[in-house]
Image (tube, rainbow, N blue to C red; front, side):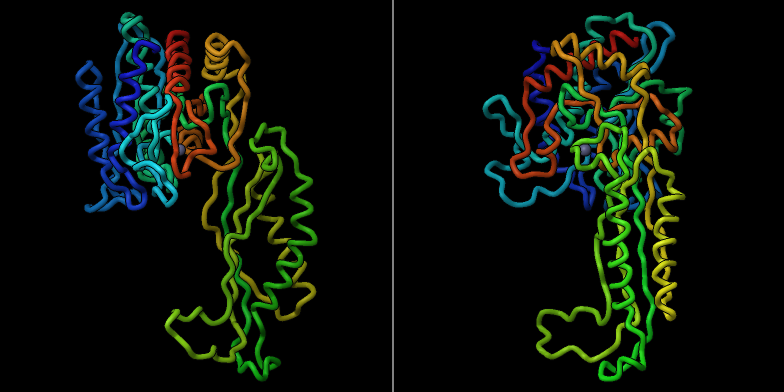
Length: 414
Ligand SMILES: [Zn+2]
């Protein structure tokens, strides 16, 4: 891997120079094609897959994915490296061009450097280094670069999982090189439930509010019940999952938005608002739950809270709408891919790995739930805090070290 450091740097730069921004999801075909051509040259079987009909797929912005497979000389298991090729917007505050792939002080800078084009490049170079040393390996290696992880993965890993690409019959080990740091193994993530709660009232003239029913006051009562009963309860629910940062080692809930009453007027409107009793108020909640919790109980907690409010407010009516949910997942520490990665980290870095769980979800959710494959981790170079930030970078030595770990994992499993 050390000998291939320059090649690894160049590949990372080449990937950064294709600005695969999501949204809207652009240049997906270019990046997939570039990877396909590179891998096909050294004997990999490559397939470009468009997630036709998936969420956000369109003729203007088709959702392209690429999968490459290299068969060994003997039967065996398949190790799959999966990285998302999409990146989030650059945003402001950069001191270098976010899409130039600038190299300085042993780091490659750019949007997607750590999240996660550096990780994709590392897994490719690691696989090539391994194959050069062990041309007679057993089983198969797969590398995929997939779309839309930053917006839920529906045109990427979810679409591929639905079509059997991650079925345990064909893939036995999955490593997602997200930037969790070269000495940490990420076993999974907490669960998510997004929902919209709407309180109902009745519109009337603001000078005679007693003739109407104020939906915002009803929502106020809901929020008060959350402050007094729900948030303290969530803070008490601790998990055995090693979630980082530590503040997320409990149940949490965010209120993402609140809307009620007359819509906000455009900035150029200079008049006063009209006096109306609001008849609708809505909040969006983002509840993150633990492996120890059941999603049915999580939802029942909210229903019970709303029923308590209803008991005190005779005219109170509400609706709860599910928006999105993902089950928590945590791969067993004894799973083969975890054990091999842990051993390799000890060999390369001369220390035991940290086992972590992510507070938010990533593509493992689809591999686990749709693909039914449990032997999956996130392991890759890069510092997670730099993701989505200005001047995002990845350390070249970190990539070399993580790549050495990946190559040793291949050596062990194949
Ligand atoms: Zn990522």
